[in-house]
Structure formats: structure tokens, C-alpha cells
Amino acid sequence: MRFIVMHKTDASMEAGAPPDQDIIQNMGALVQESLKSGVFTNGAGLHPSSRRVRLTQRAGEWSVTPGPYAGQSELVAAVTMISAKSMEAAVKHAKRLGSALGDCEIEVGPVVEPWDLGLMPKPESAPERFLLLTKSTREDEAGSAAAARHVAATAKLAQGFEQDGAVLAAETFAPSSQGSRLAAGSKAKRLWVDGPFAESKELIAGFSLLQLGSKAEALAWADRYAEILGEKSEVDVLIVHEK
Image 1: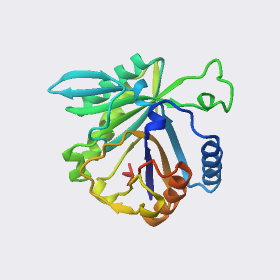
Image 2: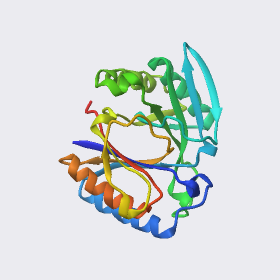
Image 3: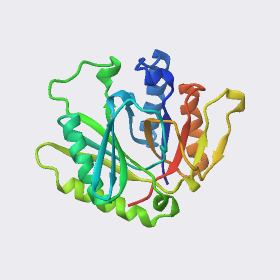
């Protein structure tokens, strides 16, 4: 089975403060261990919402809201990672995705790269990567029928790229009724709560895609992940739809 572990922002992340070096080192060690075992298959972090753009489509009309912003309904139905020349180009591609989906909300955010954390110099030819976070709707929460719509929309997006980018990854998630959440708070009071979730007001800070045998194993991995991040971050675990 495949799972996505999403951690949420806290005040320090939103202020643009760099991660603590212990977090960088311990998270790097967990990811490397999980890569070697075949558990970790993909992942990325996002810059603060001050560097993101939120797109909302209603009846074919788009509204564009640059960040920063407070969390509203932040349940995610799908994640698409793309390469693009700029935020402007990424927004253009997100609108193409949204046009295939119909009424929707998509958040566009630049990915945190190793050079942003001071782990390596930035290569001269490094492409810019962006996450397109498609927010969940009532239809998405109702069941798997909506998954086919996301898969078809992503396929159309991929076909529309020429020389200005590419789809690097795309995943669609099962309803939150099949997921679990570890809310922020003191360690002694933090417990996994099963979905469904009416909403999530915490902004997405990043994700890890896992291949594991059961949800219990995914929660155990996410416990380690949350321990590294500390008590301020909310963590969701959702099941990934198999294509």
C-alpha cells in the first residue's frame, strides 16, 4: 500500500525561519534510511505561504490570491509536482489543470531545494519545482469516483507541456475517512485520530510518499517523523489511490 504523510506549517515556518539543524540532520537520516529500505519513494517541502499563490475557479472564472494567507479548508485531494521556468509559468499550468477539473481550488508553491537549506550550492541549470495542491471537495470526500477525474486532468496537463516544464509526479488520495491525524500539542496529549476530517486549517508544509504493508506501519513511520518535527506541527496520513 502507498501512503502520504503531510506535515503542516507552524508560526516559525510561516515566518520564514530556517529549520533547526537537528531537524535537518534527523530528517535526512530518516529519509536516507527509508530510501534504502524502499519505504520512502518521494517527498518535498514547501516555502512559506508568502511565496505561494492560491487559485480558485468557479463557473470558468479564476480568482488569484497571492500569499501569505491564513488556513481555511486545507484538505488535499491530489498533489502534482511540476517543473516550470517561474511562478508565473507554474500558475499558468495550474490553471490548465484546473480547467480540466472544473470548479476547484489549487495552491501553487515553490519546493524547498537542498541549496535553500545550505546543503549544497545551487547548480546553474537547476530547474524550478512547484507543488500544485488540489483541495478536496465534497465529491472527493464521497469516494473514489472523483479519483478518475484527477487522473484524467493530470494526463491532460502532462500532454500540454512543451519546452517550459514537465509533470514530475502526481498522486491522488482516498477520502479522509480512511486517514488519520496527529494534531499539534504537547507530546503527552498527542493521539492519532481517525478521519473523516471536516476541514484542516493548517497549511501544508510538505509531504512524504511511502510504500508500506499496512496503515499501522505508516502511522509508526509518521510517529518518528512527527517526533523529529516537534510538538507544533500537525501531521496527516492518507492512503494514495493506486493508478
